[in-house]
Length: 246
Image (cartoon, one colour):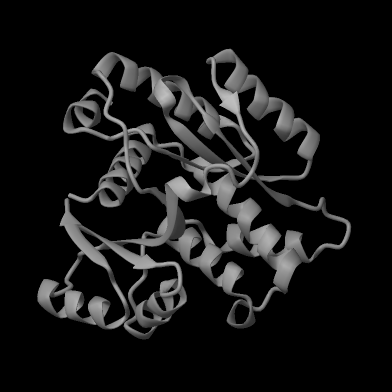
């Protein structure tokens, strides 16, 4: 299994085990709110909102909750949110990029810096790690009644670079440029992905001893538990041993 597919799989399994639905919902609600403030409440003319709604459906968010988030984004008196990215290194040379959405940039900077400091990491300057990661579209799609051969042909036609089937879920990878085309293809096929994201995929990963790898994953978890953090990407190799230990 390719590295990005492996990480998407472990993220999905881990999410199911943790059952942090309220946490997932809060992040999606924030994303919907930001998308509406940026581009309006019509998903047909707002790609970011369309993607956020797709992810909300994939997470089984009730329509009423989605609508409240849209209404909140339309409220001129609601708090303004900003996207913020942090880059740095953890122990053993593990590179991390942390994407946040926040209504208080000072608070977010303070929280992220504190985590780096507590675990002997180094917070770097933005752009310093861009050469380590590629931007890819990652789609996680329930197999359901889909015919695998027909589905894969449709995905390849839409620009899929990689297709992996595991545990009754397809993980489809596209280039950054083909992300929108893949979204339109899935919409045309009436296929609802469980998640559709632009992710930062490491070009190379670092394999650590299990004990050290688990310590790194603990720090990743602490980052992800922060309410302002949307996604965390890293260069730690997710081995079978590590997946089983988690």
